[in-house]
Each structure stands twice: as structure tokens, then as C-alpha cells.
Image (cartoon, rainbow, N blue to C red; front, side, top):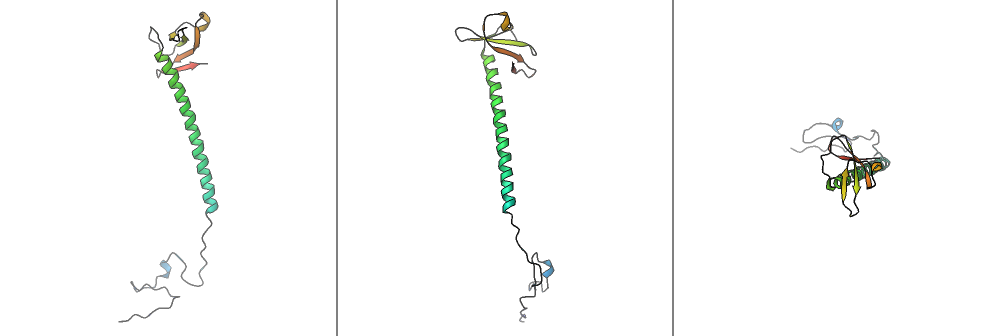
Amino acid sequence: MTEEKKPDTIVYNSENGTYDAYLKPYATNVGAPVITATDSVAWKNRSITKLNHKVKTRFNELKEQYALLMQEFEVNKLIHTAKFSFEPTVGQHYHLYMRDNGEHFLSIIAPNECDFNSLGSFYLNADQLWEKVV
């Protein structure tokens, strides 16, 4: 049995034997509105610019946080390697000094009460981390 060829203007599905123009996601007749692709280049450029700005800003924030973390690490390392003969108490202020031979030591004596070479005053917080007192 030979199937009759339909004209090009008719949308016919030969597998199902149905007219399925209404199922197509695109225009199927001459009178249908023209489908034009929207220009998405401007949107893409704006999105790329926003993303680049966001990534750059977040990267700079992370760099600053890293620098602060490393500074905190160095302060704690310096104090933990210093000599002291007492157990520091959380919430107390201590003072770091340097001897003439370059050795560091921690003391409860304030810089205004002695003539040692002061490196700064520090506070032991609840997390057992040393914070420099300004």
C-alpha cells in the first residue's frame, strides 16, 4: 500500500498517522508569527561581569581573612615558644618581653613597672588563643 505524499504546508506524522502541528514547539504554517532568537549577548556579558566582580570580591575577603589568621597564628606561636614558669589564666593580661640574647619570655609584670624590652601585651581568651592588646 503506497502512502500518499502530503504537501509541505501540512504537518503530518506518518508514524502515527496524525496531524500534529499543534504539538510542535515551532511555527508550522506560513501565517504563524516569526520566531526570532533573542540577543542574549548583553545579558551574558552583564552576568559574566557580575560573576567576576563577586568572585574577585570574595577572593579578596578570603585573602584578608587568611592574613588575619596567619597574624593570629604568628602571635600564638611567638607566645607558645616564649619561656614562662606559670600557667596562664583565661581572661588575664600578660606581657611579652625579649631578653638581650633574643630569648622571649612572658610575664605578669606590666611594661610601665619594669625596664624590659617589651614586645606587647596580650590577652588569653576563652578559646585559649592569645590576642594582642592595643
